[in-house]
Length: 273
Image (cartoon, rainbow, N blue to C red; front, side, top):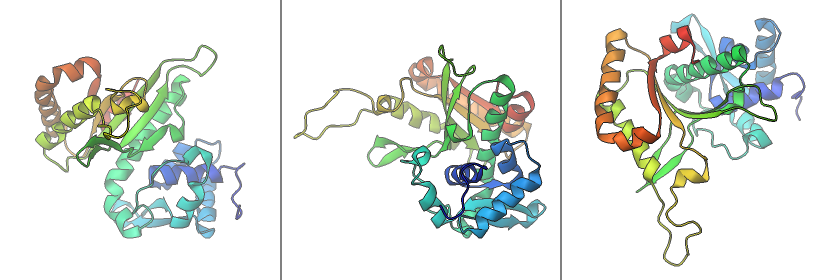
């Protein structure tokens, strides 16, 4: 397999970049969570780059931070692995210009993932790197779709015979690039997804008439978490107020689906737990 050693973390490193779109060297070191020095993570990334599987850009405005992303070849290879089969990578994820333009938002999404991954490790819960799945497409009719920044699977307690509570969540990361009202309007889209039942062509009898589309993927509708960043305390409060205002007309939805909002700073400082 062109020198990729599945036993030393190279495969996981490529899988993470294929799924997360991009990450800094420090983020990759934390995601992989292996008992090695960060210099070894740098060597691993350099090795994958030499094999043509990943590439990087340098953010001069962030202390010349390196941002790693998969090449088209790396995406093709990783897409053949069982753990990534069926995932749809972004079409521009291997384009350096697109990576540069999307870096601020995507790296914030990756940092949000790390808040949950590291909290799970501290508490003995189960949330592994590939349990964080960015941009899962959910049609809601008329050519529209709900595409959360990430879908997360998080199991409380160590997985054993009795198991633990599975907490699924749609994650929306907002960096204050849109107004509070536009952010709050996303609540209505999730309400539509919650009620959306695809129409069945007239010539085909419905297998399960009247079933909402999300039930084909989830036993329960995932909870919804807004993670807010890119603005100060007042900006965060304004955005949460807009979400609360939008919630008044969606009481039925909110009575069935837990919805939360927090700043990324609070999420990291106080932990998701």
